[in-house]
Amino acid sequence: AQPPPRRVRFLFSDTGGGHRASALALQGAMESMYPGQIECDLVDLFVASKVWPFCEAPAAYRWMAARPIVWKLFFEAGATPLGAWINEVLTDMLCGRRYRELLAARPRPDCVVSVHPLMQGPALRALAANDGGTRTTPFATVVTDLGSAHPKWFHAGVDACFVPSDVLAHVALREGLRPEQVVQRGLPIRKAFWRGRAGLGSKADVRLSLGLDANAPTCLAVGGGDGMGDLAAVAVGVAEALGRRPGRSQLVVVCGRNEAVQADLDARAWPDNVRVAVLGFVSDMERYMGAADVLVSKAGPGTIAEAAAMGLPCVLSSFLPGQEAGNVDFVADAGFGALHEHPASIGRTVREWLDKPAQLEGMAEAALAAARPDATADIARDLAKLVLGTRTASHV
Ligand code: UDP
Image (cartoon, rainbow, N blue to C red):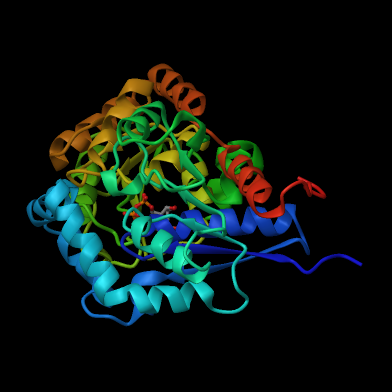
C-alpha cells in the first residue's frame, strides 16, 4: 500500500502579493508532480499568530509601500544588526508559542518552506522546540525577491536556500550560508507561464479572445497585486503619448485590487485613437502579457519574472527602495527594459519602442534569455527530495 502523503507547510504573509504567489506556484507544482505523495498547505504566520502588531502586517505593508520613504526607513532599520536582533527577540517573545502551535498543527508537516524574509529564525526555533530541542523537520527558504533582498532572508540554519539570480547567490554566501546550502534556480511562477507564449495562440488571437483590438500596438500597465506605483498617473502618461502616435494604439491597465485607481481611470476621457481597457484584478495575467507588446510596471519581482517568461519588454515605472532596487538592474543588465519614473518619460519610451519593432523584437529575445521558466518545477523537485528522500516523481 502507498504510504500516506507527506505534508509540506509553506510559511508566507500577504505583505505584497509575491510570497503567496510563489507558495501557490510551488504547491501546484508539487501536488501535480507527486500526486498522492505530497500535499501542501500555506500558513500566513503573521496573520494566523493573531498577535498584534504582527497580525496587521499585510495592511501595514500596503500602507508603507504607498509611502516609499517610510518603507525605506523600515527596510533599512530591519537590515541593521540591532534592528534584526530586536525583530527576532520580539517575534520569539510575542509569537513563539503561537508559531510552535501553527508549525505542529495537524497534519503535522514533514517539511517546512519559508517564502518570507522574516520567517527564518523564529520558525527554525519553533520547529526545533517542537522536535524536542534539535530540529529534525527539513526546512528550506525560497527567496521571492529577484535582484536585491533583505538580509533576513538568509539563515545559516536552513537545509537549503533557493535563490533566483547570481546577485542573490552572492548575497546568500556573503550572509554566511555555505555554498552547498545555496541552490540557484529562478523565481517560482505560476504554471500558466511555464511555456511562455507557446502556451497561447498568436498575439492577434489572444487579443481577440480578451475583447481587444487584434492589430493595434498594445501596452499593458500593471502595479503588482495592489495596483501600486502611482498607476493612474502612469496610465495617463502612456495614453497621452500613444495619442500622439499616428494610427490606433491600445492600453490595458490592470489595477489589481486597487479600486480607487480603477474608479479614477474609469472616469477619465482618453485620446480618440487610443483604446483603453481598465480592469481590476485579473486571474489570467499570462493572457494579458501575451496580448501586449510592451509592459509598464513597478519593479515587482513576480511581474518581472513573468514578463521575462513571456518575452515581454518592460518599462519599469518605480521600485520600492531596498528589495526592488536590484530588480531594475536585473532587467537593465539583461537588456529587456529600463527604468523611467516620470509619467511623460514612461509614455515617450513606450511610444518610441512601439515605433521600432526591430528593437522591440531584440528586447523580447533578451527577456526570454533571462527567463527561468523551469524554476518552479526544478525547486519542486528539489523540495520533494527533502521531504520524500529517495522516492521519485511519478510524472513531471
Ligand atoms: N497579479 C495578478 N492579477 C492582477 C495583478 C497582479 O495575478 O490583477 C499578479 C502578477 O501576475 C504577479 C503578482 O500579482 O504574479 C504581483 O507580484 P509582484 O512581485 O510583481 O508585486 P507585488 O504585488 O508582490 O508587490
